[in-house]
Length: 353
Ligand SMILES: [Zn+2]
Image: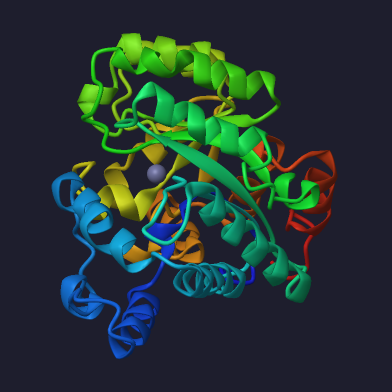
């Protein structure tokens, strides 16, 4: 099978983690020439071919380095366009990108979001085969006010009034992400009013759950499920009770599973064959969406994730096509978009198979 030609849906991709080292290098070169940065070359900080970032080394890459590089409109536009281009070239037809709105020395959080929306709009006019929507992320380390301000950006026009209604319709969801060791033992319930309000406002909810054991407690699962999420990301530490609870909600929930990210980061043991994708495949009716998480860091595009799934879990062409179509009903982009995907995504009868 041609895994690049296979039309694919990507639902779990962090914008800044999806930026390639080469693109970061280009941004750095421009800033260096203009005397605007003292940072080291990205190709030295994140060498090509290095993908074994774990949960200790992963988050500082962003807080100390990548965010410090992407501070103004030209750098954010350049990086975002390059990310969209790489998903397009990899055969992705529908993409939900997620990002934590953050102010920079030059931009407010609202301006940051507005730059993303206009970059996405312009890209889509040139490349209508890829439809992209935006999810705003609440970080586990946020306090309540910060989380509320993320929600405000998602459901209101910005204070500057620069987000047009058309662009605003492109923000389709709210995510819970960030260092999974933050706010353990049910403390995450701090955000309950924010996510409840988001859901009431019609946003789709997707929540990182059980990336590590500390964020896999029963209390945490109960809290997250009480918010009414449509999707859960990672779901690595599945004990029997968790599995039963999720299986019981198989018609309401889709799991976003990331093979390379979990294996390279050492979040699962035993390599690809032991990835919990295999476990979840055996639970009748539970829907799965393969995703890259951070292709810029872990280096495996979505086509390769499908290739890995086929290879390590012995899926034939028919099963791969069914897997790719499995998340259509769980996108946040609306009914019209679901219809488009049902039309264009491959099934048993597709000759290109
Ligand atoms: Zn993620």
